Length: 579
Image 1 (spheres, helix red, strand yellow):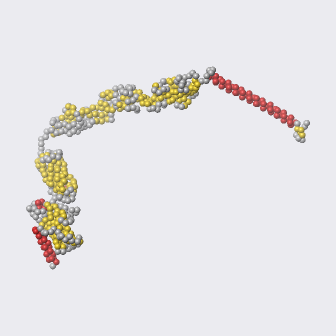
Image 2 (cartoon, rainbow, N blue to C red):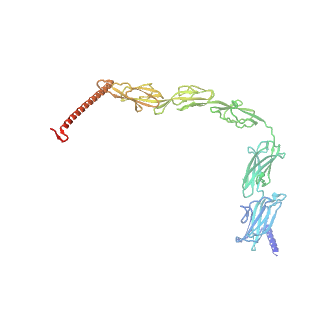
Image 3 (cartoon, rainbow, N blue to C red):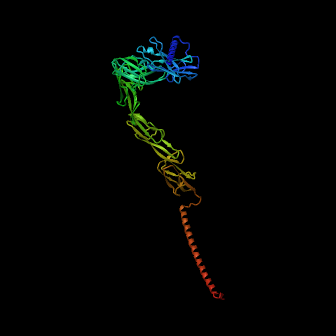
């Protein structure tokens, strides 16, 4: 009895569907908001939940799972019979209606599944396009419904292919070895991005594979343009070449399957008799450098740029310097150069041999050193010949040596550059000797030997390092010479002549004292007077000693005489003095 009732209900629902489709039912869903049915698919993110929504796309022969959620006051209703109907896009070939029913489960959800068909004829015209689905249910005597739409087609498909040459221009005829570029339009009908591998395969007129390229990408909804470059095999057969562009879920080597059939295009592989000219590239002298660009070129084309290195280092102090190009003996300006190939050409890069002139000087700034062409004449110079350090020390240029000669710091003698050269600037060290006299008002000055080099400062002279300078303090009328003082240290008194070694700057002063006016007393007189005084003191000492001895003896004798008289004047026993 229950089965018969269910069959009757099913018949009524099917009849309602037919009425809805043929007579355009008066409503799409019940106005009673308490009674609801929501039709959606298994496509996550874009499943079509909600009233009259769209779902993400499906591809041919894909399994479609429809879900209908039946609620009353937003509470799920189990054991409700739901009718499903799905229609393809209206077309002139075949219009299909897919019908099914199912009961809602404990969660109030009824399901219905079917697979997108693929007819044997006119499949794309019948299947592709927007599909329409509707679900109806009777809730408390009122029929409610929800609709859902979704696209059916190739989810990812190459819709166009333009064949370009290496300069990105459209072309239909190519030569063996040519660069070829495929400009592809990829269409994604889904509502989510798709990862894909786009594969290019080409077969020549003999059906031999001559090309295979792959490019991975993520393709958003809508159309995307990509380019894949390749090169035509030099062994391909002349004739028509067929190209297949196929989107795969993964690389075919990793079991990827196509999203859609390949897009097919063609181009022609032809042979053209080419006229070519040879470009010879060399250097003068031969073998100085390797310059790329020599070889065969098509008539009327430009050679690759010929770039000659500016310098070619042979060793640290020998090099070649680029001078100029000549083409077929005619000098050209510029580097690099490009040659128009209208005949055979010879391009020669001319170089000059250079040697390095090294100039070494511990002081001053040198000029004239550096790289010089072979067999030229060079000169070296210094900006200064004397450097005063301001502390009584200076450096004086003396000469050029090594591979140069001359004693003029502003310019050496000529240097012939026939090999690497090294020049040394020789300097000597000089110290300042300052000679003074005290009192400073003395007009006569000490004498020097050697005389030294004059300075612009009074009483100062320059001497080469380690020179011994003799200084002599002359006798000066009315003055007595006392001693020499060198760098604040007094030398032996009365020594008129001293020697100063110029191992550093020195200051030497001669000290005099003014002589007392009167008779002239020679110096030996003072020595004699000193001896007389010593003799006199010695005699006085002897006389005093003898006198003291004599007095002491007299006093001793007097003592003994007094003692005897006293002794015999007393009676020692009775202590009575005898009269």
